Structures are given as structure tokens and as C-alpha cells.
Image 1: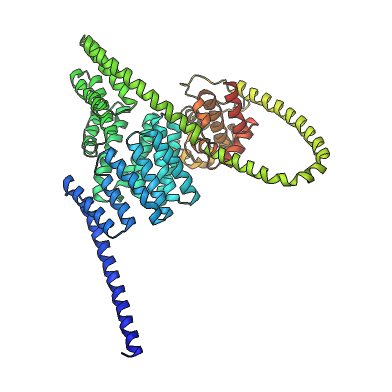
Image 2: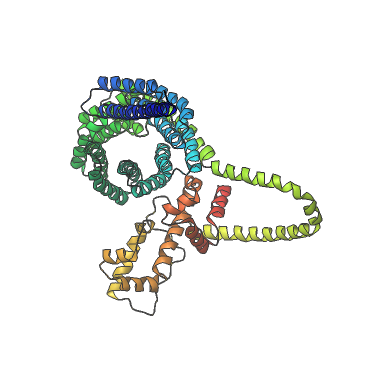
Length: 560
């Protein structure tokens, strides 16, 4: 056999082997896609879904395709109960080093956090969420960061810190809207909608509902069914808050099937609770009891916890009193006590983590970095020694300067506090400690009087906390931009200064009344009170109070 003939034969073998591997790889990909389609099909029974999921896992193991194996285990995890789901998700972690892909690791951390959250293991969920946020930020995986925002927002919501939950939901909404991910966009909007419901912010609640309605047609037909079901739940809540009980009942009943199908106990109990409240308010006590009893069953049989359960038990206790059934009254009272103890333990653990582990994590990292820099500076001790005398004089002068500044700031802080005189929490009007008096020498025109009344209502409704433009107000108040601008310039020192002043004044009052608000990051505070960026917020706050927001919050905490 000639040398050249051997080369040709060897080349043909290589080509054949490559062709075989290519076709083998294509076949594997086709098999994996087939398994996914069957598992996610509504026409496949639960039993068959599990069989195909096991076949998917075995196929990936046989091929030593660890990425496909993780995906197969993930598919199966959604088909089983929590304990088996937990085993599968935790087992996936062992294959991450074999793949060695940062993106997959980031995805996995998000999946793990969502797993714990869905089963109310909030402590574990938050621990993983912190790890996920740090990892994905270090890798600049913005998509995963957007996703973990939803989980963190959910945890804030469970601890009843609805303002901070709203900030995180809004962040997720804005991100996924720009990424054109309609599914996660709608999930974020749904969380935002429930938060607005909790806050009784009905204008924002209605706007969120409208935004969801516009987004649903942009997802697949299968997802439209699910999203429409959850939209009906929000519509029911909005109708209920507006005392449209018949309409609310209809929406809640339309939403119930999807929660049952998804085994979504959280929203299932919420529907039963609201249906019970509607029946109670309409005088149908027995019907109300039948719904509220289902809420009790969820707590008893599923060990499901939620703050709304307490409201259900107050109605059940009232029902027992009305029926003069002392035994039933004792039963429901004991369950309410048991529920309160469980919620208090859960709340204490998670709240501590939120403010100790999560909120201070970045500050601790910054402190560590500063310490490292200081350690490196020790090599300059000789140079510092030569300058110690001069530096000592400068430091002494600086100490005197700081002392004077501290006294000046404390005096200004007391001045701001004395000017605001915060009213009770139920106040309607926004604080206004620098309002300009109307000129006494000029007669107001009919238009000016009308517009000033509109401005007064604008302040009372706190509409200045929303994104607002002069053009939009002019249109809403049936005038033109120039006329309205002139009124603002004459009586309110200009439109933008007036809006920013109201926002800062409102924040100053809210920070005094709500200690929880003081724990929110400055960036998130700025967004919550209508400012586009932290720099503008800091500038406006200092212009209004002559203090930085950080200093003001610190002094409030010290004086608490």
C-alpha cells in the first residue's frame, strides 16, 4: 500500500467520523426538543410528562451531556412536589463545574432562589438571592439581575415593606420591557399590580392593569390563558376597592380556575377571602362562611401562611359569635394565635436578613475595600512621619471646622423638623413650608382662580409623586401650556422648582413618620419620589433643606 493511498484512507475515516458525530449531535438535539415539547404540552397527562422527563434525563446522562442534563432535571422539577423539586434543583449544582459556564451558573442561582421563595422558605431564598445578585453583577449579567429583582421584590412584599417591593418591581418592569421579554415583563407587572393594591394606590393600580392588558396579546396563546386568569384577579381587586362587588365577584370567579390548575395557594386563598368579604358585606353570611372556610382549609391542610389569613380568621370568629357557637369561636381564635406566632417568627427572621445581610452587604464590601487600601498605605509611614507636624496642625484646624459644621447642620436639622410639623399619617395635603403667598395687589382672573384650585387638588392628591409634565397638566385642566406656565411662574416660582419642592417636602414628612422608609437606599428613594437620578435628587434635597438626605436620615435615626 502506497504512502499516498494510506493518507487518503485516513482522511476518509476522519471525514466519516466527523459526519457521524454531526448527525449524532443533530439527532440528540432533535430528541431533546421533542422531550421538551411533550413535557410542556397541555395535552400530555401528568404521568406521561414524568415518564418523558425521566427519559430526557437518562438520554442526557448516557450522552454525558451535562448542560442537557441540567435542563432535563429543571423540566422535571416543575412536575413534582416541593421535596422532590428541592432534591432535583440541589442535585443540578453538582454538574455546574463540569459545564463551567458563568451564564448557566447565574441562571441556576436564580432558579434556586425562586424555588425557596415559592415554598415560603424566605430565609433560604434571600440567602441565595444575595449570592445571585452579587454573582450576576460581577459578571454583568443584566438579564439575570433583572430576574432576581422579582424574587427580592417578592420577599419585600412578604415582609409588608410594600414601598421597597414597588421599587424593585418597577426596576424589573422597566428592564424586561426594554429587553422585549414579554413573559417576565408581565410577571413583573403582576407583582407591581398586587403591590399597588396593597398600597391602595388605585390610579397606579388601574394603570398597571391597563399595561398588562396591552401586553397579553404579545405572548403565546398558551400563556395568554394564564396571564388573562391572573389579570382577572387584579381586575377583581380593583373592582372590589371601588365597591363594585358584583363585578369583582365575577372577575374573582374567572380567575379561580387558573390558580387551581397551577396549585397557586397564595392567590387561591386571596380569591376565597375576597369572595367571602363580598358575600359578608352583601349580608350573605352562610355563603361568606363557605368561602372563608376554604381559606381555613388551606392553612390547616397545606400549612400555607399569609398575612391575609388573619383577616379571614377575624371574619370566621365574627361568624362564630353571630351563631353563638363558643366552641367554633375558640377553635378559630386558637388558629389565629397559631398563625400570628408563625408569621411573627417568619417576619423576624426575614426582616433581620433584609436589613442586616442584604441592605448592608454593599456597605460592608466598601468598608473592606477601604481597609485594604489603608493596609497598603503603611509603606508610606516614613514620609508621613516627616509631614506629621504639618498634618497635625491641619487636622486640628479641620476638627474645629468639623465641629462648627456639625453644630450648623444640627441647627439646620432642627429648623427643618420644626418647619414641617408632620401631621398624622392620614393627612391628605402635602406639606408646604415655603409656599409663596398670593399677591394682594393684583386681582386674580377667573382662569387663574380655577387653575390655582386645580393645583391645590393636585397637591392634596399627591399627584406630584408620579411622572408629570406641564403639557399633561395643561391638557387635563383644559388650558394651554403657556397659560399654565405663567400661573406656575407667578404663584409657585416655576413648574419644575414647585414639583421638586413638593416631592422633597413630602419625603421629609414621610421619613419622620415611617422609620422603615429610612432603611431604603438613596437611589431607590429618589425613584420612589419621582426623581430620574440620584444626583438630581441629592441636589434638590439639599437646596430645599440645606442638608443631604443621608445626613437627615441619620439624624432622624439618632433622635428616634
